[in-house]
Image (tube, rainbow, N blue to C red):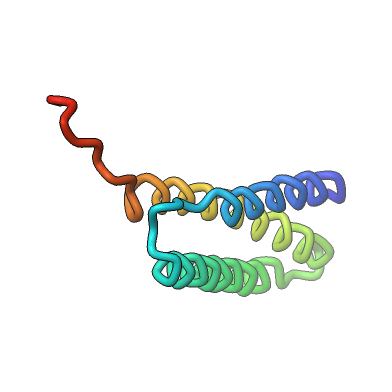
Length: 105
């Protein structure tokens, strides 16, 4: 489980770096900052609820040792998927690029 967690940690770090590095240049910086922090807070709430659910599901003594590795791997998976989806939504839907006029399309 350790190599999987390290792989997810590396992928999660790259996704988080990409999320904060490639921001739309035409967006209002204050609105963009509020949106970014709202996404981070929502992601943390989802990960905390997932971890609380894992504590309930893995309360038996037989699977107690798997509780934290699965919670960490699941939270990293949530982070990767959530930030990737919010990256696409932020850059191409919420703060969409200005339309190019005069093309006739």
